[in-house]
Length: 281
Length: 159
Image (cartoon, rainbow over all chains, first blue to last red; front, side, top):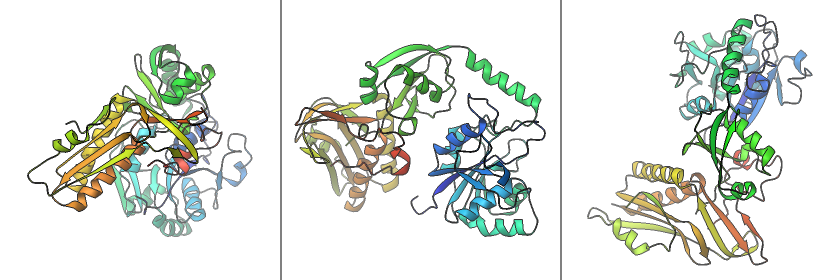
């Protein structure tokens, strides 16, 4: 593991969003912009995370304030962002993720990372629609740098064709829906309705506290009715009520006595545990 | 014995060792973690261990099974204390029996290292001056200090 290139995250947010008729990065499905939501998701699993932007987007409010990598050849689509990242940090591998994937979750990313083959140029999922590589939720290794730069220099722009012809490890998606994207205003309304319906209905959850969280909450468990749709939202809600000092990056999440992640949908009756940094031995 | 378990009383090291006996084994390696009287310059008077046992038992069992698969050893187990411990008490025991010594040492090391980093167990130190603190939780809980991502092993200062 330690010999592998460090894994950096890149959120692609440079698209023109022409079919959506609004900026896909700024759209909210999870109570925050898709750009920030995706950035947070990558930050959970990457050593450092950046947002890919065109030069004219650097000061745009949704994107300003996040670490950026600026396209070197704007106008050629996502491969401009990928090649700029590979160019900027030649020793890093890049987990590249588009910001218009509202169904993506940490489990899917961890699956990709666990099955990554650093000896190949890339590790990608097979599309559940056509079986071809999904370039916009994939790990691009440092060895892809020269071939990608040459591909772009030759005037080619399609990251999918690049992966088809490169030494790419293809994985089956553990969750067939995880990479469904939302491109049109109609799809957007359907998706918001789907997430909204879940979020609006309160569910009863049991939260158990251990160690420092138990002391700060003043109890070892509580049962509550909440509209929080994910552990991330639940922890934010609990921080309003209890003086928790630890931030989510320092905690892990367990659902019903198994490790889970911050973006797993919560169901009625779930038992949730937030796990502070451990110190056994 | 179970691959991973907790005890709220003193560990029975001889009994555990006998459980790992095997006619095919050429050796046995073990590790005992002891409660010491200082940590990071603070004089420690006693410790409390607390665990999320339902998940800890599963994760601990996974670790022991990983060690068996990875090192080809014969038997392995780990027992961890919970509750209040005094200086010199045994906090954790790992035992491995195997055909040869190299894999016994390696598996023992693997199990204790993984247990310390993966199993939901917490340790509260009580200091001579009357203060107390949860190890790895309190001195790190400053805004922007994200040790799980930046330097996951940097706070590994026990035993």
